[in-house]
Amino acid sequence: MPLDTLDLDQARIGVLCGGHSPERPGSLASGEAAAKALAELGLNVELIDLAEVSVSSLVGQIDIALLATHGLGGEDGKVQGALDTLGIPYTGSGVLASAIGMYKPTFKTLLSAHRIDTPAWVVLDESLSTSHAVSTARMSLQTWPLFFKPCSGGGSLVAGVARDESELSALVDAAREGSYGQYMVEEYMPGMPCTVGVIERDGQPVALPVLGVETSRSFYDYEAKHDASLRTEHCPAPLPEWQAKKMQQVALNVHRLVGAQGVSRVDFMVSGDRTAVLEINTLPGLSSRGNLAAMSKAAGISYPEMVRSILQSALTKPAYVA
Image 1 (cartoon, rainbow, N blue to C red):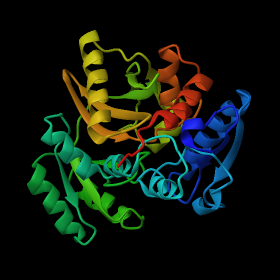
Image 2: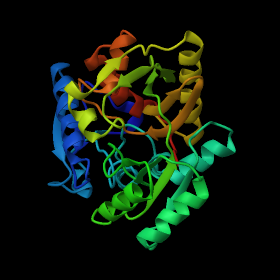
Image 3: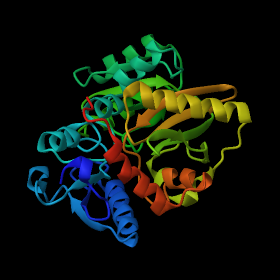
């Protein structure tokens, strides 16, 4: 079905999720919730687990793809490139914006070039010995504590706070058992983790209210993100109006800077008057209880309406997206 004649009420919609990413559980939750919402709206929808079905087999089977894929292989431009090649329209960003958003060193370099505040960082290549990696971090950043995480990936998997060389050594050694390959450390910022969703409404990106999180954990880790008893969310976040508005504008700027399309979520750390950008999620979680849904609700947008808006944005995407 040609894109210019595609009618969502008649289209065969495939909600793509799952796959083999370390973030598979979150992706399945996103996909199931989004597919249920679209079905309740009366649309023709099928939930598709990319661990069971190849992207190439979708030609002729679906007219449009709503992407609920997360992490490596799903959020980094690979699925997007395959769908582009196959001529299947899809939600979210194209190959370039997806790859930039996934690979944090390039994303942070872009932020710095445009004078957007982000914590100082250094990359630790997997070829470095543990002792060499630790000394590289110490000499480059010259401060403790530090925050350790993969260069690609999300969900706070394989991440942690290192208060000294011993703790950083332990994090580096533990990470070698994973599949991410390259890691980084950055300046640790105490404060409130915040996030700003951006969704397309009537063809224009709109920043949602700021969501802030409090947790008793050492940082907003995987467990806190998936266990509501370990966190308290505030939306709108308890911030001065000027700071919240600034973050919304920065989120829009970052969305446009990487070339994001349709939807994104920009994560910040707020420490006093400082608001530093941590990363952009070009395919944020779509769970009905997730951050994007909470921010949409605060903006007066129901969950089914949010999902349909994201789906609709695939039809207003420019004809060519890098």
